[in-house]
Image 1 (cartoon, one colour):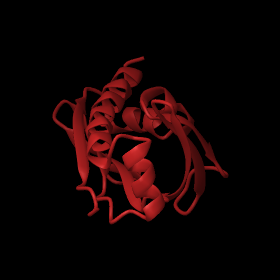
Image 2: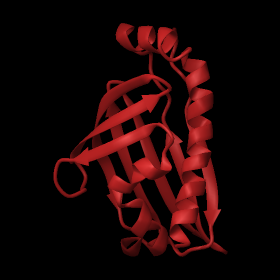
Image 3: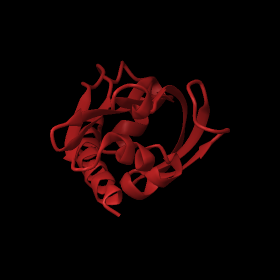
Image 4: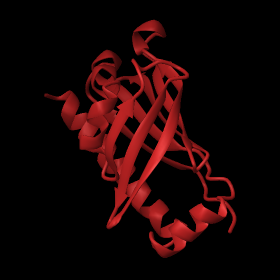
Length: 157
């Protein structure tokens, strides 16, 4: 099984980048927006290099992942451009959110890098417990759109 291609979704939010960052950077609240994330436990305050434990769920399958923050950029320090990203083990992918000022507020882009050739364990779990990697990627992309829509709604509160 070869790897999986990268995934990407974007949304325009009619809120300045600082307002979007205030909601997005609260990592514990991400589980309310992400369909697959059950919870996140950060080991200390968020900053580059910090580790977190995540609990994920897809249908009846529940699994943990570890991540390390690879980018943590408050848009207040870069002309409204912000970013947060984390490398996830055991899948060896990076998930990221990038904020860009736009004419109407903020363009937010969520990305997952290409999934390299997964380990035997990941391949077996993907095939038998999750219906296959392609099927899971379809759900992940849908989940990205749902997460961004929920982020937009949370910034309006």
